[in-house]
Image (cartoon, rainbow, N blue to C red; front, side, top):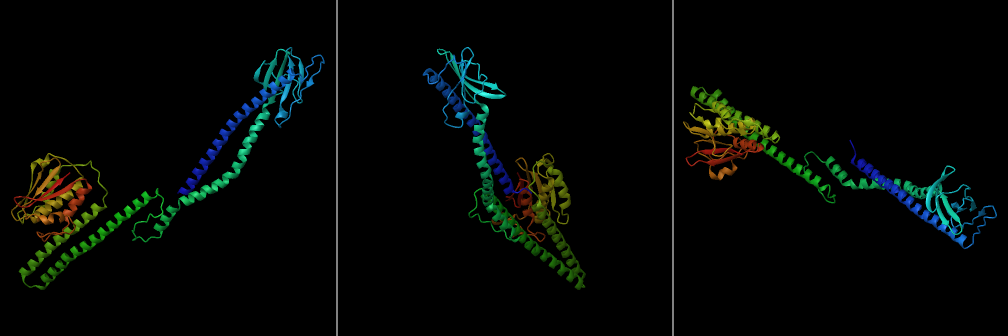
Length: 442
């Protein structure tokens, strides 16, 4: 696992080193150019100075002696002693030269700057021609000397850099550790928390770059806390709802065993069957609720044929003993819905089952397409839902005044949860003619 502090340290050190290297290169190039400009100016100054000394006869030019004269060069610095000066006649005769100057002609050009090679070394030469006296002054210096000057400058920069960089690396490391200290504090806080401690993390004295992370973590803690609270409530409600039918089953079984009257035993057995149906339905709904909550947000894209699914459910949920029929409108076979088949089946099952259980004997539960596209309407002829209870009927385990014995208060909650995960919604309204209208819509 890569350490953030190590990565930041390496990035900063490499970046700083690159900046230093770039600065050294830039200084080297600029220094070299400036040194060449200054030294060229010194060459030009020395050449003109020697020429003026010849004109003022401070330097004697006597071609009749047949020997070369020594040219005095004023010494101001180490560099001055490296200058070489020659005086040549225009006929090509060496008249004089400074100490240390080569005997070979420094340059062949008439005037100005030039670069030449003498004995394998490069020279920079400035020439001044005096036509009246018939002489040419050549002043030059060895480029090796110039390179030495530039190298001395760069060496003076690199040596401090070599000493400063380790100290700078240490400061960078301390800065990175200090900058990441808030993250370390958060990690320490989370590491020593109990699994049940979902309190928000305080963002006091925290860098603003870390605040979004803290807000996301606190949001996650809040969602987990809400989920755990719902699970606790769900478990408590489920235990209560299961306890009642199980106690009833036990009581009816005791009645059936203790009674000698056949009619009483038969009635007790019928109550046991009703209790088993209610308990089985409750367990199935609890499992459906748990499966929906564990499912991720569904992606749209699947297509269902509502007519086919509704006919299958109608055959499964029809109650011949109560003579409640389920009518499926033909137009449902000609439309398609963009919803997951499992989600639509689960929602439609609970709505139809709810309608059948609340419908009186001999009534009809109708399933039809709505006036708008992508709408399924399920209507019953039962008592409906009181208007003051409509906002609460989708709460878990809520059973209103018009409850039935087989209900558990989970059916509509399952429908709303399942449809919401698919981007659909449930709408409930009472019919003018009596009964409830449940609408599955986008």
